[in-house]
Image (tube, rainbow, N blue to C red; front, top):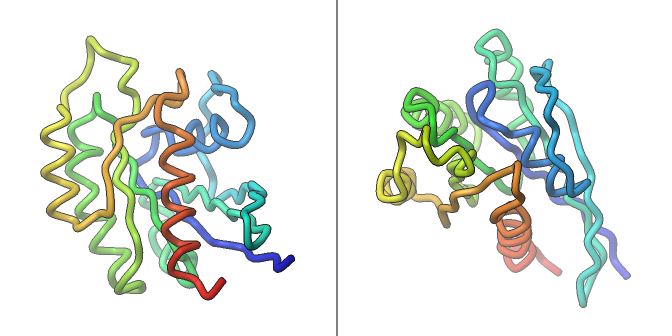
Length: 172
């Protein structure tokens, strides 16, 4: 059986929950002690498909501006992107366009999944579903999901759908 590795990047401002989403997907747990990612972390998830065994190499890139010059080199070779904003933080939503502009300097065509995270914070939501759908259309994302890293809502779906899309477009 052929073994393949797909490189997926999570992009978004600091504190939007990128690491929490990955931890929920990989370990089925929610991290409560937030520590900013320094540079990047790579997480691996093995998946056994009908035609091949493949692994997702999920890159968690730091959202801080001081890492901007490093990020562009990490974009190379990526096969899928998950762009994450915090539904309680309007600035993180607006900054998705900046993330996309930066990405497109290096990668022209790539499947992008748009994610509005932290929907469990219902009393604090500032970005509604319709806003997320409009942004999905604007950035030409393949899909949009609202997630909660805390409850696990839609977390597996975003990674598995993106992996499926990458897998279908690969040469397996």
